[in-house]
Image (cartoon, rainbow, N blue to C red):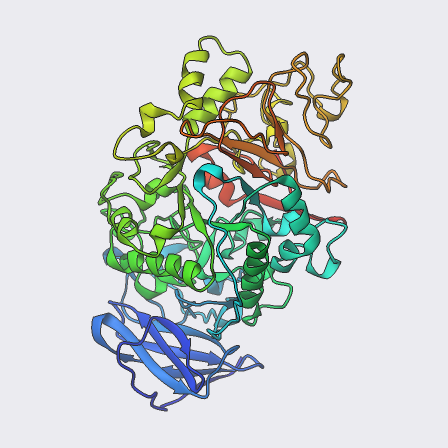
Length: 605
């Protein structure tokens, strides 16, 4: 790859917005770094040739410049010159091409050459001088305009919502009625056949598992595997490029928008599962792709030994939202997805880590205070996974937030399997968990009453196995929690479970709704995928939320009850994974994918 350094002076700009912004004539570029001595903008042509330009330092440690003639589709990155001093938390290394934290599209993926690491192979505190540009993805300039037409938010009340948790690739990868060329993509989700399936289910919202640009871990790629779940974000503004049917040159942004517009037209909301608690750069042994090389100590929580990272996430690092730069980044990202991508809400992965002050969780943390005051975010749904590997803060988030109610999940599972003395707590949980949410001006809709989610057993697994069986994914059954509170109903293999003597339906079948006949079992259950054409296909589960403020029962068509507890919303999932609660974070990060002749599907529990 050839490199051309240039002394061309970029046109000056004042108060340029962070990232790359195209105005029709050219593009402004701006990057924050409080430790940089110099910052180079690196532009790449179609042949991969690199041209470098010096940015000027403006106010507030923002390095900026304007380049006429640069338009949408141009690939770029940054090189930051500054101190390499791990003991003080600084890890600048100009040999490493860095992604723009505000990049709205990203092209390519990480190729795991030793050059992608900022440090020497045998010492995380010694700099490596090899150029990483041939092996790392590029940021992409994107046009801002898009014709939304008469797009309107469905605006479904939380108490009436039915969220359907969907993996973008897995949902349509084997769908026979979706054209093959768009299966497993944003366009596939918006295809009429997929939308019709969602409408038949009766759901009101599609909750997409992570769609921020993410990285396939080195240890997985070395084994011929991929990161299926996507909880290794590196681009908080960029839709993941592998989910695009139209390439990675920026068109993935409009394809995502078209998906949202199509789902809205069908009356369906779009919720994003977002991972702001850590990044794919991992610990001090991880790659230098973006934040670490830009201003390491300004983005990550560091230990007293500043060369090492605080790990509240189980993934090697923790983004420090107590600091102004990452807080601004996350708030800007959230507003971008609402205002310019038209999404309707967010589910925050390991949200307890986002709400830490200098150490422990605080309902008055800078992040929670910022979201509580934001006029844009006050109009959308905010759902917390209220724990991380060191905290379990169910019931502690402020008004305006809903939470996954892990206590509801545990209690309902205990009740299903007739655990002694479960009934009193069961009554509390289905009545809205007032002990958790009856304070601080919160409403019953603060409780998202999960039963199963993408972490841990599917609902079918929950009533089919006494313990987890993750032998097929290469982790030797060590991944995921052992506290699944499951019961196999006396027979292990789901497809061979004897049919109910009263109605004839197999209570463990994977291709039909679970029997709700009172003589068979009294468990809540959900139908499985309508496209279970292969043993490798994904399997949906159901999870339920309830609101004591809502009277009457409207059981969704995807779930049946032998009794009628009050319910206002159902969470349903079309994927499966190992793990559960905070113990699953590190395992989920390395969840694997097996590539088969029938498509790509996770190696499930």
